[in-house]
Image (cartoon, rainbow, N blue to C red; front, top):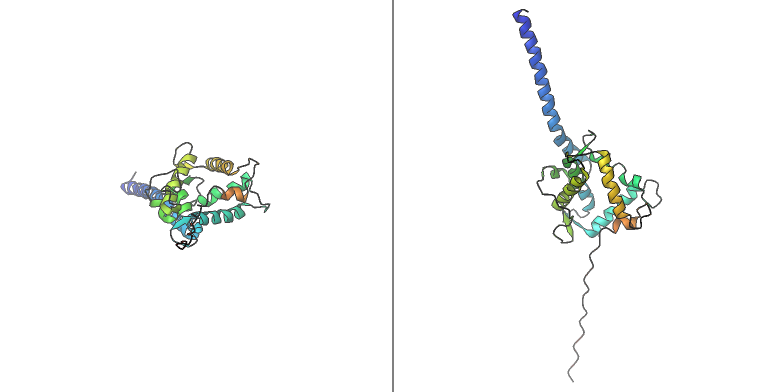
Length: 210
């Protein structure tokens, strides 16, 4: 083989190797880019719930959003949500880069917004962790990390459609209080108790001295 031919072969090999490296780097950065793009197009669940945009969710805001969500899920408009309606297009909506699996980053971004992807908050299995009857974005992220970990049955850092369906089925059963195979709007919102308004004691007028 001539020296020129050897150089040509080596050059082609080098270009091929560089293409593979570039492709790998591009693939590695795709998720972050897609997450940001997807989050800009679609409001996160937190943003949809936060009606007054104060960065906190009250019980009333959460219940109002659950009522809206119920209508979205009730595809046939019969006033009841079936197990199939409950899972709906959830997986497709959360799987931003459409690779057939949902990562922790995609999951928390769907619920808490684009900034959630880089959040280092530890998982917590209580939504209102500090018990102040308001839920912050940080609390949503922590709670959703816990939910994601519970769904990720094999612990590989990705949730498949089957794993997400199993998680949704459990949520459905938790909401179906009377076990009739359907969830009503009352059952949907009953998971969030509205804090009781403290009663103000009426002061009686002082009786005049006799």
